[in-house]
Image (cartoon, rainbow, N blue to C red):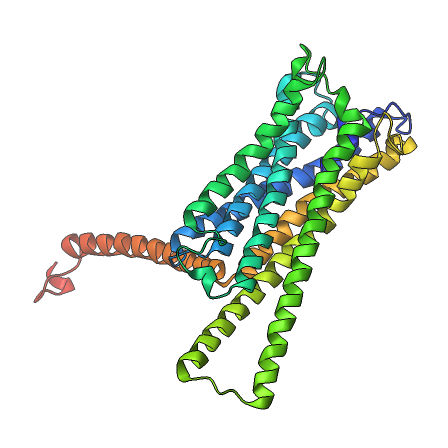
Length: 375
């Protein structure tokens, strides 16, 4: 989940015999990634700004998705700062001056790792929300349904997902005896050992397994409902009109839930593809007690680190595309936002033009009954 250890400059290999070549390699790798991070921060902020134009009330799925988009913005900012202060400035540009203290860098690392857990928590929350919607599609929208998340519950859980993981990681860093934030020099020896790395990666892999089980169960429920509807079509239904309308409402709600599930599965898939290489590298490769020791070559470590970090950023980019292409509420809200800004700009320009025309008409244009020869 964390960026690959190459960007910590922890390898002592001499594959890069020429220091300028090593510096140029880091500049070539880090600069485009940081630039893309900044671009994606702006794009995700635009998605969040569209919240003003989204039709109320906001659905539970959309509320969680917007919260996850906000966590993507936060994670992108932290990722770009980590690459800037851990890689581009000290290694790529060779700037020896340390802009952030070791404790600040360790806190930044904890916030980045906590941000990854926040995203995983949002995905689990979405899976549980979809399970409620598919299992009880009509009761799901009742105001006081006991098993479904309502607005106040969503707010509380979203805030907890934002606060608890980073705070928990920082607290763990502070409780390690003679290491981490408890050490006066804020050392990070525990980050180089397999115990912490495997434990942290286990959270990611176990979450993926839980989500797979939830969505497999949802798939079975959807198939069972589809079989019942096919059976009623074959034998003919004897329901009253009220029952038929109720069945139609339930079917419509299930169709909406299925579309939301497909959208979320795309997000989960992009998360697995984007984070799996970094997670495996984080768990299996380190300086102490791991299966592999820094790949045995700084060149290989640099290449793997570049791939891992690129996939981490592309995952966020793909999620942003899903928000705008698959979620109709966000798609329509962005269109309304563009039209609103366009109308405002045109109106301001029109007012300026009208004001100028009025001034010109007062001082320079001939009045009624006059001609140019009389002026």
